[in-house]
Length: 219
Image (cartoon, rainbow, N blue to C red):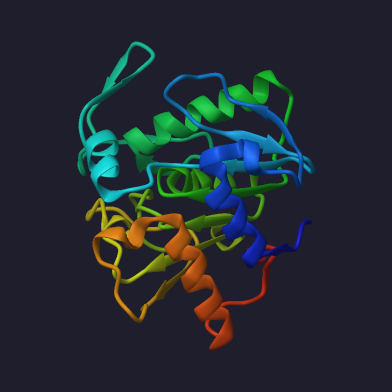
């Protein structure tokens, strides 16, 4: 099982918006779906970028969208059972399902998952599906049921208190161990940007609120 540095995970999550910047671990392949961003790196690390501003997040993730031929309602009352049997937010599950199907097509089983924003939503679902460790930054709420489920401890979520995205959708819950960190100074609107999450990882590790590495917990 990979024991991954949180500092390195944050650097990869920031670089995921321009994968040509990533030189190590080497980029192997990217999902060809025009509406879904996912990358596989050396070591079968699954890297999942997302929307990098609250404005983009609300415009893309919290309005009706179309993936394939299905029209989806991104609202609190729509759920669907996933591959693992857990009830998830329908829109986040549909996004994750595209990645799941692509990985099956290219015969890749991820050993570690790293995601930001919408990618952190998918990281929660896919960490549960594969039973592998995951780290999510600026993670929205994906799971409909409250309380722990199988593989719950595999996933670690790092959220900023001054970021709106981890607080929605309100009727849902996070999957995994959640660290909500208070930043000084508060960033408010820009707080969702991944570069400010790199900042909060440094602060959280310096004062002992975050570990240096994450290998996933035991259920």
